[in-house]
Image 1 (cartoon, rainbow, N blue to C red):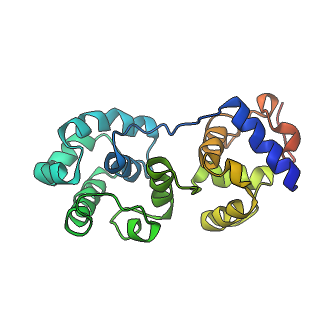
Image 2: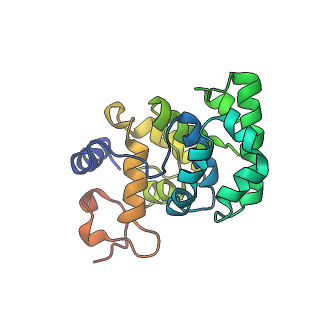
Length: 210
């Protein structure tokens, strides 16, 4: 996709949704971190059903350590891989308390040292909680970037690096939200809704539907 088309692509997404928001429920940077860890191989809807009660009981790493791994499990048992995720939440909470004064670090390098936290999770937290211009490449962004021609790359990390080079600075803050939402609701995996797509004419996908 040409530079001018990329600018137009994001201009239209911004016009349609000027202030996009993530769909995970959270109350502070720590609960956002926990929610994103829980969302691995799970849906945001499924996570959002479990976390309000968990965060009412424990919304800081100190409080989570008090309820313990069994307390966490009781709240998240409807979420896939809940046993492993509960252990990770306890382990990362211990590190936050011991090494970061109970605060979520604002550095990718520090975040990815935490159990259950990979590059994508770190980028989501940095973007949403701390306003950093990161792009968290999940399955939706990976698909949208490759399908439209925004970025052709074989791995999520390489797509991320390509997008960082190609997305104009003025759109960088919200780029990952726009792309995730576009992939979740319009540029879906099996049968993209090309007929209702606002960037259809800019897209390089050769097998458009509708």
